[in-house]
Length: 176
Image (tube, rainbow, N blue to C red; front, side, top):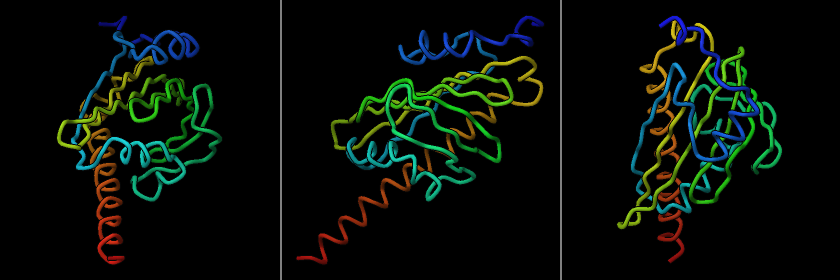
């Protein structure tokens, strides 16, 4: 129990290269969470919204993009979530399939995976998985809170994507 409480995980470089880039989370992290949602839109529309980080603050609550260059493997970005400053770096950018990054805040290290799965009926399943590790983390943060953040994020992503699809349908109907 004490060893888990003080677990700090692999170095950020190892976490990025050996875990995130290979589609893996840190299985020994104090917190590991996974949540999914089905979006009523094709995978290309979900990707379009999800991969456009510059627009995240328009639809995601309590989120601010501080610094962003390209959305490509190895590119860094800085952002704030619920007022907490995070430094992240993209690990996987596979259009219409996966967007994964590693991040660090207050010395805690995370792998965030966003996996898209096209469904037979034209909808898309989006799954968010995260591992979060660092000494004493479980004393003030829980898997329940982590999962609640993922579920809020997924609900907001779903609403944003579905609104763009509805707006396109309205535009198409008006142009007829």
